Image 1 (tube, rainbow, N blue to C red):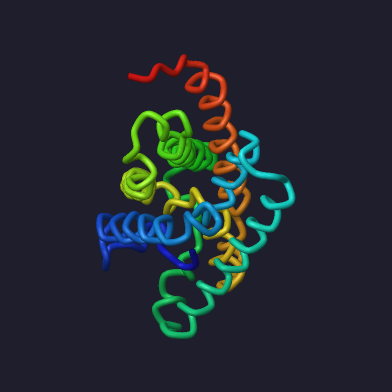
Image 2: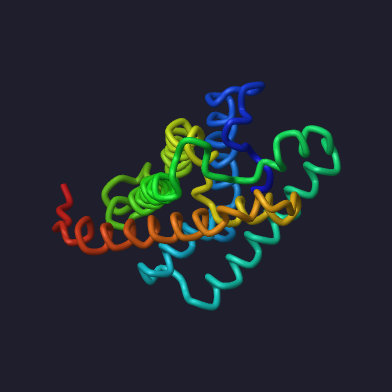
Length: 213
């Protein structure tokens, strides 16, 4: 999850193309890694699952460290192959777009991450797995589609973070002032969104009585 896109710098590829590439790649990565690590990929997802007591603190810390290291390595690989394009688009570093306030950017990240993490909870919920045998096999599909939809909505606002590791990796490798200026938005927003999704799932969705047919 390294360099991806930067707000106001997407005209050559198009917002839809970027959204599809992210959604499709997340679908593939979750499908391939779910049996190994749960397919988190994203510190916000890991944080939400930690709050829901679905993994230990030690495992969560190691996951987040590896996710961030992977993002830095991914950004470095992109820079090594496409240095000119990398510099032209500001390293793909996330920033709040001109015309939007920090509050708007934070709100977009909160809502976008809430939708993603809530989808993860819903797609992997044990109660649904017990009722619908097809759910585990199809879980990566709604997760990837959620990533696609969130990108469509929030690329014009923040370039779409919803993954603190992705935002950090691009900032570390690009390492210019503008890459770090809004970095807090891309940590605070996703972590708050993930916490809200965990709270909603645990207190509302899991409170609904389970009835088998």
